[in-house]
Image 1 (cartoon, rainbow, N blue to C red):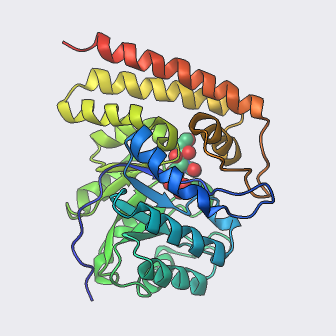
Image 2: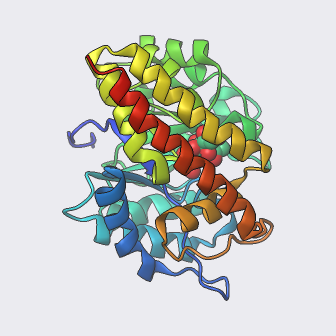
Image 3: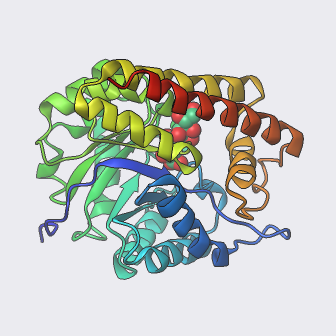
Length: 316
Ligand SMILES: CC(=O)N[C@H](C=O)[C@@H](O)[C@H](O)[C@H](O)CO
Ligand SMILES: CC(=O)C(=O)O
């Protein structure tokens, strides 16, 4: 069965954090407020749930199901799309999550490569993806390319080539790598209705030039409103403004990197900026000192302020 036609996803997609309570249990009750925060405060209307940022590999299958369900339910009428990442080390678990995502009304599923036993070649990975996709044949399927974390670095282009023949529901790519030639080849050789989504927030503008339709990232949780202006400027052909906004987000991210930016720090930063009680990360990640997140938040505040002024300065 072919996947039904849905509106092609574009623009910014926030890779969501997983709310935990102080006991370290998932806390889905925060998700309703989280949705409202993204929509109202960040102008972000699409989410990528249970990915890297959501610490999916540290969650149980049951927890991932509960979170996917809550995001789909709470997002109804508010979010344009809820994409659920269902990649696991176990094919069976990925299939179970794919079926579940279809049952709870997700708009798409994404899968990374297994990364303990790694696929020996691109065909092994393509077969793995195919077997997951088959469990939810009506859901648009995205390949999530994340070589730095999976250690699986076949060219995304080699995974995509002719993939619609083995995965009829194949629908696009989330490319979290820095190889813009590979990304460009994916754009060049894919049908125009496959969204090509870029995942390194610090160099989104370069990916837009290369043909990205949108972006999935962690920083859109708290810099979505700023990066939306980058997208607008790019659409209008104001590359000077687009670049100055990208430079500003780079300043925030590079400052954060100097403070030891990882998913734990990122989550704490989101708590500080949004006021949402997202709780600690789960082991093996460890909570970062609040002072560190506050310092990054302050930098962010300064830079976002400058973005406003910078934007005004370049207006005609
Ligand atoms: C590995 C990882 O989590 N990547 C995120 C999503 O793809 C990004 O949004 C980064 O957090 C961001 O680009 C900052 O480096
Ligand atoms: C950032 C991203 O795409 C993820 O959390 O998976």
